Length: 462
Image (tube, rainbow, N blue to C red; front, side, top):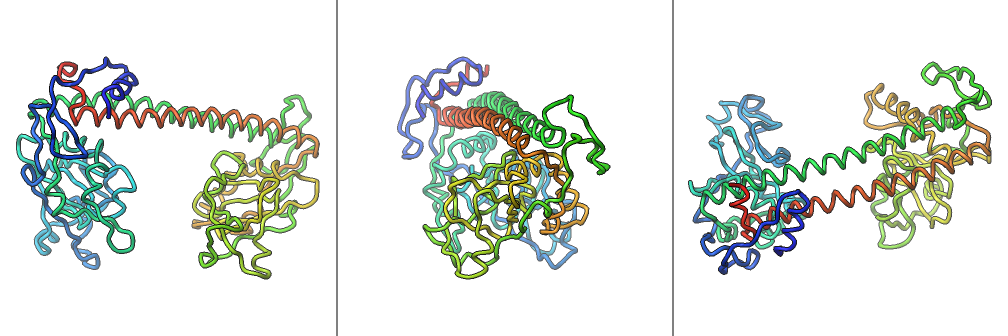
């Protein structure tokens, strides 16, 4: 990363721009490049030792649910580890030979989809044990483990590129014999601590900005949901005469509207077929899945689609979609809804989506989509899901949904207003997400610049 890029990162956090060191030397590592002349460049075997982990027998319940943390990759979601989802007992320590590792050590994941995400690294603050997919790195006294953790977070993928290889079934593993030869920068220990203090402070500022922007997205989505709910349950005219809906939890509705079940407004309700993986192709008909539905919107996301060559006969015909069909997720992303647009090519649904085909011209597809997306629609789906303690919704749950029906022309006007509002909110959210992406890039750039000596932060920390 260039010094100018580092300057942009600093500008984003509101701190002054830091200058480079006076002189640099070759580190001997291609991924690292030049480092300040007074820094050391050391192979990991010179500055650390690694401890391996293991898994006590799962069937021996006396080994589990004790007071000793047993850290696995699923716990590597925070910088400091003081607890874990699974724990083991003193008996497990005594009888299995698994090691209790004193803090502080740097934990890394050495098996799994290592390069799929930011390099998972954490520091222990309490004695822990680890499973076989982890390594605990013990560093010599003049190496601050927090500095190493920031180094791995900022440059992990660059380091790992030379030491990770593919194992069976797509699993990635770190070759520890290669790991021992990885060269890392080692500033004087006081300088390591200054770098850590600088990164801690500035990433906290960036993280706070990201949190504010993520909250802004939540507020925009809540505002859109509130508008949709108001529009499809009360209309847009506050002076319209109202009547009792006859549904206790729904309350009053416009006097000229009707209360209907979705099944009474549909030609049929069905879902996709299982086992279509054998029909997957690189081109051909679209195979619509949960990933093609969006939260907070009734428009499909067709940026990433699976193609199929569907089987001939009734099963293919039953799961084929038409423009205007309503798609509702019945597993996983429960209640996500999408309306099939005009002009879509041949497409089919999988078993995780219900397909609702509206009947006649009495009700508009996008009106129904907004009814399901409203708080009223979503609360009905959640009640069916949690009330029955189920993993998914049945087609009868979908058929039983209560929706309101306004006159056709009023539906058209309300849908138009909601579509315009949705496009405006989507545009705002896209801008905020773009800003979040830039902040995260700058965060990584700032970490990288500090831990590799591209910028000298000592005076700023002092």
